[in-house]
Amino acid sequence: MINQEIALNIAKDYLKQLELKSNCKLVLLLNETVEFDLGWVFFYQSEAFLESGNILDALGGNSPLIVNKYNGSISATGTARPIEEYISEYRAKHTKKKLI
View 1 (cartoon, rainbow, N blue to C red):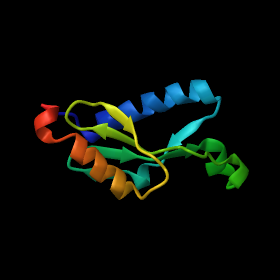
View 2 (cartoon, rainbow, N blue to C red):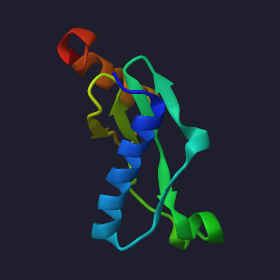
View 3 (cartoon, helix red, strand yellow):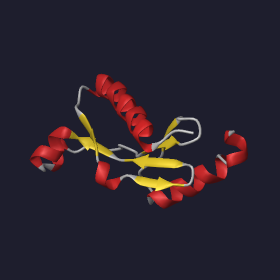
View 4 (cartoon, rainbow, N blue to C red):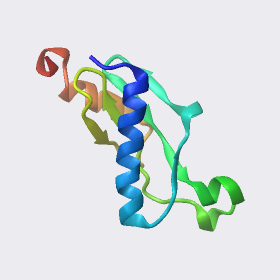
């Protein structure tokens, strides 16, 4: 099992990989992190948008990331529905029995 600090580092490393592909500096929105029984949901946005507030600098399709607390795996969610629905789907697919 991992703790939130390790999960945060996993999410940061994942964002670094995305930055290389997108040529855009990405920032985790730590105040929006959601913890649930199987892990954490991390949200992120472009640094440019966070600094400027200009919608033209905002990311589109930046689906929140789930880091699993049992094995450290990372999964992208989606952006079309509330995060609670993605958490419920994740929970249904990843029961504790399957994770161990």
